[in-house]
Length: 123
Image (cartoon, rainbow, N blue to C red; front, side):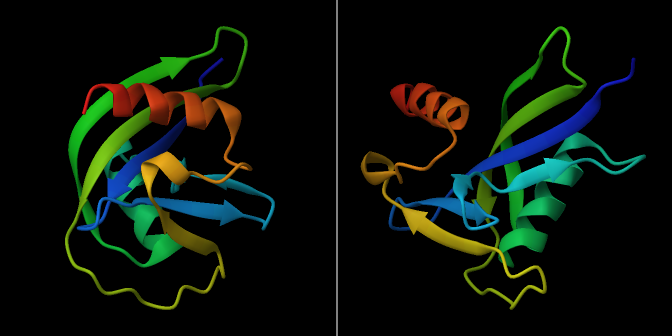
């Protein structure tokens, strides 16, 4: 079985806040999602961040790639850097906010919180 590739990005602004999106107004997560056919994981991370938030960014580091044995997904986690500080109004109406790393929302997906905390230990 071929795995669906999903990519997510940790992105900070100049004030040291991390960008999170509120998917379906229920849980917070990093910007990201499924790759398109013929799209690299890096291209997916850049596209999904722009689609969901309006921010243009570039990938500066690949942190982890992992799959779960019996799950149909392979996940990539990147660190990105903002290209500009302007947003556009997106048509998906996804809520997003910048959070200080020590004040992440309680409704952040638990596995994503673990990944972010692990990353922050090495800063």
